[in-house]
Each structure stands twice: as C-alpha cells, then as structure tokens.
Image 1 (cartoon, rainbow, N blue to C red):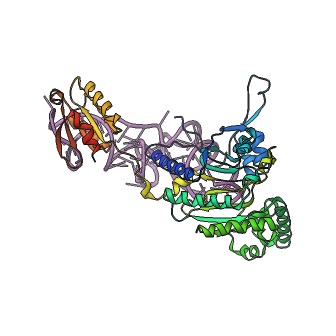
Image 2: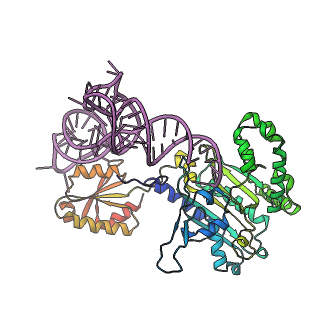
Image 3: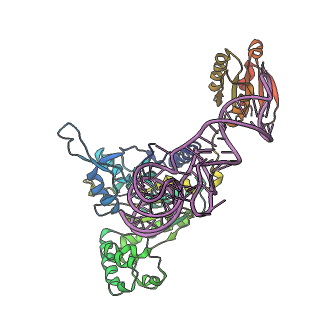
Length: 425
RNA sequence: GUGGGAGUAGCUCAAUCGGUAGAGCAUCGGACUGUGGCUCCGACGGUUGCGGGUUCAAUUCCCGUCUCCCACCCCA
C-alpha cells in the first residue's frame, strides 16, 4: 500500500471543517486590521533562503527540501530550487521584485504549507501549515514604529481569543541590533568560559555551538550558574531600549498581558529588536503556537532597499491542536434528505433537490433503489433535519411527505411551500 | 540526525508457555415490499506494518527496515 510520505498527513472531514473555521476567523481578524492577502510560490530559488534565513541556521543547513531544476533552457539548467521552509523570505522577495515600497506601508497575510525535513513528532510535521503576516515598507511610512509591533501583538491576542484558544501566554523580548548581539554573544562566552566545565554535557556543547541555548537547560544543578549569566537586556543600545519600552507601554495601554522573557531568542538570523512567542500547554515539547519578530535588515540582506518589517508565523497545525474539545462540531448538517421511492423517481428527486439548493438549503439525495427503511437510516446517519419522500402518490398529488427526524412529526406539503417550510427553522 | 516505546479487521483493543487470529463498535444483508433511531439473527472484513532468520510450528523469539508516538536537537 502506498502511504503518505513521512511527516505528511491527510486532513479529512470533519477535521477540515475545523480548519476552515480557523481560516475564516483569521481572515475576519486580518480584515479588521487592514491586512491583505498575498500568495507567493511554494518553491523559490535556494539562494533566497540561504541569504534570507541564514546559512548557519538549522533550517537552511539541514532541513530544506532542495533539488536541481532539469529545465531544458540553459538558463534553468542547474538552478537550485527549494520548497519554502518559511514564508517571510518569499514575501520580502516579492516586496523587492514588485517595488512595493511605492505603495507605502504593506500589511500582508498569507496561509499555506511550508516544508522542513525534520523528524516528525506531535505538532511537528514535514509539511505543515502557517498563517503568516508581515508589515513592511520604507521607514518613512512608519514601518519601524513600535506602534506596528504592538499592533501585531494585539492582533494576535485578538485572533487567539476569537478562534477560542484559552490559556495562552505571550512571551516578549528584544534581541536588539546585530551589533548588540555581537557584544552580548562575546560577553556570554566570556561568562561561560570559567564555569562551563561544571555544567551538564548538553550545556558544554551549547556553549560552543550556540551559547544562547544554554538558557534552555532544564538540569536543576545548572540553574544557579545560569542565573548569573548576562542577558541581552544589558546590551541593548539606547534606540533599541526605547523601542522595546514603547512596545510594552502600548501593550499596557491596550491591556494585553505579556511575560518578559529575556532569554527568548529566535532561530532565524534575520530577527532584530522585538521577538515574541505565544505558547500553550498541551502541545508537548513543541509548545509554541506561533513566533515572530522584527527584521529591520532583511530587505537589504536580499539586495533590496532599506525596509524595516515585522511579522509572525502561526503554526496552524498547532493552533488546531490547541483548540478546546468543544470546538469539534462545526460541520453544517444537511437540512433535508430526499428519498426517491420506486422506479423513475430519481428524476423528480433531482428536480426537487435543484429547487431546494437554489434556496441555499443543504440537500442530500438518495436513490430510487433504496427501500424506504434504508433511506431513513441514511438520513439519520448524516444527521439530516428532515427527510422528504418522493413516491408515486406524492408526485401525483404534487405534494410531498416531509418528516422531521428528531420529533417524528410528519406533514404533507405542497411543492410550492417546501422551500419556505425548510427555511423556517 | 540521536535515543526510547509502539505497530493485530475501517476504529478501539484481546490472543496464556511459541501451537490453525478473536471481541466490541462500524459496514452490508435479513427479521420488516411506503416510515428511521431500539432489539434480534447473519454476513463481510486479516500477507498480524514490510523483509529475512531460528523452529515441526512465529502475532509471540532474533535481526533488518518502514511508519507513528515520546524525548533530544530545533522550530511553527
């Protein structure tokens, strides 16, 4: 049997209804904040991600689905292409390619699949879905304002509330400018050097490869040491510090609760200043529903003009996993099951179904070969409100037996009044 | 990529010491030819994830492999 490839999965009804509910709600929220949809390709040139996300990141160095184009044209041959592992680089590429700075401030959202070649586990798939938003434009259009950061965070709080997720936590930090991070990194290495041999094996490795990660250590014995290490907050320059402060003050003004986490870092190279995550229990080790931050230097890194921006990516799979159990039944059930009874009745049933569907009723259609009992069972099974019997007697009288399945109440109703009856509760 | 656990009918799970693979639910049919849900009866359903090995005999023991789950790593 051919199975779906590792780390991919089929979304089936009724789960798809839940996904559609989430996406419809998300679109409503974006509309209120004047965000507009952008759709970019699902694969891009490999170079885009190498430069945009960063050669040294895990994503680029070992998680991308990459192949070489076999195109016949010389210009295509050997072109290295990659299934997008994230969406920000592609959107910034589109910003540059279409000279979107001419439009001032761009507020985009996008929903679609991303691909990373990781080992799957709960809430982590090789094809997964992200709901992205990006605010990008020239600084003169206000793209660098802390007001944009706060608006994004307030939007997210609204969005999670609207889809029905409770118990989320907003974790907030500022990772400063690249220069701040260089200074911090150096200070961290210096602080670790004399104590690292007293720490666990993982930390000893992290101290070399990625000192930030030492903060993630869960070994109790290491905590006193970690408490003494410097945090990025001490290394922010005045402008970054002021920016961060203003973001927090606006959040206070709009009453969005947040937790400052000076140890929060993000894995993609392009982040500057504001960095954030919304976390949720019940997701196992992958507890981040979404993450994001500011990327003031990304456009230039990709060969574009200066264009500060901020964005986020929601893991839609994780968002759905975080929904309360009460969110399960959002499927609209049929209003009526039409039961043709006996030879030649399919034709009349089809005409009736067509009429009723024009009134925006949800109609399921049986088959004339079914015994009436079987039609009833089928109508029950799909949860239809009514069953409509189309037999010889009904056709002759041009009036049909309509039975309410839950109450058992049955009436004979003239054809002309059918739709009205079905529409009225 | 590393470590651990699990894989038996569509689903949830049994199967004693290695001895011909079973139940509930679901599906289909019948009791019941134009009136459902309940009940009863019956049927269908399996290369025990896949491949190899040991054995008279493997769902069971061994090896490999695939997938999922958990953790690491990392991220959404």
